[in-house]
Image 1 (cartoon, rainbow, N blue to C red):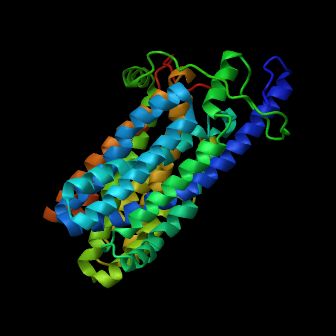
Image 2 (cartoon, rainbow, N blue to C red; image 1 turned 180 degrees about the vertical axis):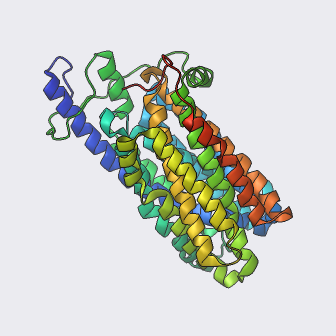
Length: 446
């Protein structure tokens, strides 16, 4: 079935509403599956790297996954700009699955370069999960962008909260198959990524980005009413990507728009602080607990942290639409600063450390949801996928730098100093969010 762009506006909007609801349901499902894969890697990656290569290198290995997610954002968004969201998401998940297999092989062979390559490619799963949030707003009603983006962020909760606890089960099962300790969870992650890729390849039709472009080219309003009933579906016709919509053009657009700059900064700084503190928390727990208990404790603490990241994102999205993007960004920074204070003074008291990690997740949620929404609505539609890819690139590189530095800070100065430095990094975002937008400056699009 195909949408008739010459039909009445009510009929066209009804079709758009139907496609958007279907897209959100599909993304919700695949985010659960992908969240399992990504979070198992987060829970186990630092421990596996520390066992193979040492504590100082654990942060470098973790950063390889973050760098992979950042670098893969460039080709993935290029694929999306040319061919739509579906092939980009499928490629990202497939690369992540290959990375998980290579990490398993590195654990078997104890070959450190293979571990780094595997973690680099494993970042494809993260890249796919991050790009899914933008896919959710391609056809979203402007007044609901924050809520619909946050819904997809929240979907990760279901898989991600349980995933660290599955890591221990996966480790026990695969150790019986002859795999070394901490290797098996990555095999489970690869299977999850493959499943998500297959589902998206078969069911994400019509492609929401291509649909939005066709409607924009036909000057058809993309404003689905909330009570619209589904009629026909939109045919997936080719939609050419605008020329000159690469990273350089994306940077030029962001640089010229204060709201876009704030959106990128909020996402990047929030991610930097979160990665710096979270990446070394398993190592912190390992300092005071025996190997037999550390996986269980890591599972509990990281489950609580991830609940903070994702479980309240619908509320964060509602507040983003209700109070404004900047207000929620400021609230997110407040939670990040509180998290650094609580975690940094927790010592080896696991319950207090858990509270700090929950606050850390809440701060990340505020900066991620509000920053991503602000960015998406602040740039022209033609260059939007490239700008979104640029944002994820900056975010990933910031997180990678934090992960690299965190390992060395942890080894030579300790966890409290690490949290103090993370808090210092978050503080400048407050000034940027409070900075008034110059009159007449290109800012938010309606």
